[in-house]
Image (tube, rainbow, N blue to C red):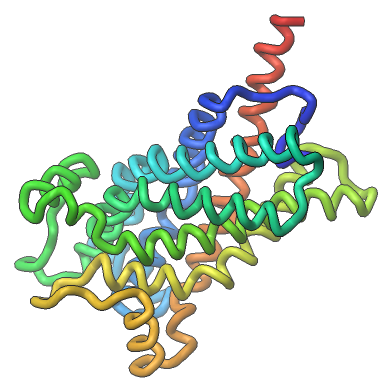
Length: 296
C-alpha cells in the first residue's frame, strides 16, 4: 500500500513536485491565521486569548492574514520540494524494494524535510518577520510590503546569504516535522486499513492526517519556538544557535515554554496536514484518472 491510491499507476516525478506545491498552498491558505497567532505567541510570550485579542484590537481581522504572500511563497518552495521528494522516493522504494517499512518512511520523510526546509528558508524568514512586526516598536519593524519585497530588501541590505538566517534550526525542524508527519501519515493509513473499518478514501485520509498532525506537533514544536526566536533576532550580536536557544529558553522560562503556542500550532498543523495530504492524494487521483484514461 503506497502513500497514494492507485499504486499500480505511477505519477511522473515532475508532477509530484507540482502537486506538492499546490497542495502546500491550499494548506497554508486555510490555516494561515493559526500560523500568525502561533508566531506572535512565541515572540510575545502572551497567552492564546491575549494574542488573538491584540491582533483584533491593533490590526483587525485582516491581521490574521498578515504575511500570507510570504506563506504562499514558502509553500511554493518548501512544500514543492518536500512533498515532491517524499512521494517520488516512496514510489522509488516501492518499485525497487517492495513494501516500505516504517523506518524507511521516517528516513525519506526526514531527508525530504531537510532539503525542503533549506530551499524554503528565505521565504520562511520573511514570513516570520512580517507576522512579528506587530510586536515590535515602529523603529525596529521590518515593514515588508509583501513576500517578494521582503526577499529583495533582505538581500539588498544584508546580502543574499542572510536570506538563510536560521537555516540550521529550520532544517532541523523540517527534518523532525516531515520525518514524523509523512511517515506517521503513511503508517496510520496502513494501520487504519488493517482494522477493516476503513476504505481508501477521504475519510481514511482525514483520520490518518489528524493522527499525523498530533504526533508532528508534539515532536517539532520546541524546534519551531527556537527557530522563531532566532529568525526574529534584533540584537546587536549574532543570534545563538538552535541548541543554545533551547537551553536559554528552558533556563529562563522553564521546559513548558518549549511548547508555547501548542494550541494554535496544533489547530494549524492538524487541518493543515488534513488539507495538504488530502489535496496531494486527490490531485494524484485526478491526474491518474485524466491521463491514464486517455492512454487506455
